[in-house]
Image (cartoon, rainbow, N blue to C red):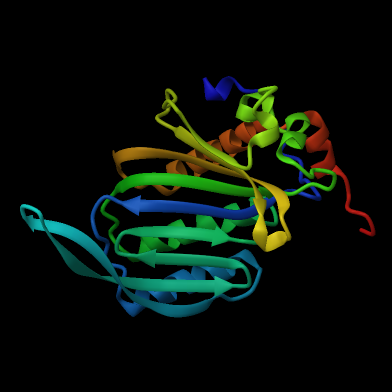
Length: 265
């Protein structure tokens, strides 16, 4: 059971490798979020966290999907996506007919991120009649680059053994140029599931630096009513589980490196 993993520390890591955090609530049916009053209500609620105002922008975009109305005859269908995007620095809140999401590419603390999620859910439940939840998810993407890691096999002392894959093979490890894997975990008793996507490679955009991406997606699927308190409680559970998986994916030396204050700090 994933919840049987050791309890995480939840202590802030000065050199945490977090590159992206995304929380998303997908609706079971399209929601009526287009009226200007919805965007205004979101902006007013979000400003209550004390971090300043969010810039409100109307969201209008188009997507294309391929359908097959006749056997073997693909046809592109155009769909309109309407809603609102609110931005403050690296934090963005987006609502459209299909979903509500909060994301940041500069992660501070769980408390501050959760506050934005809380205010966004409260604002939307008060502004519109929400149709119900189809999927609730929390995603952490970590990009790990460490000094001294010059070839793939150097990760064997930093990543947990269950993630090193071919790097543990005595004949293959020297010739592995890159590898990727996806691990899907069964649903827990509370219906929460998780997927870990991992990739290890030499990043050409970073002068060939050996890089590991750990992408943790914790989620639940299936229809249920949207209740603010219950949604936030489940979000906390997902955050806890994501941290358990993160700490289970790395070794003590790598965790200690993340917990060390950077030089010159």
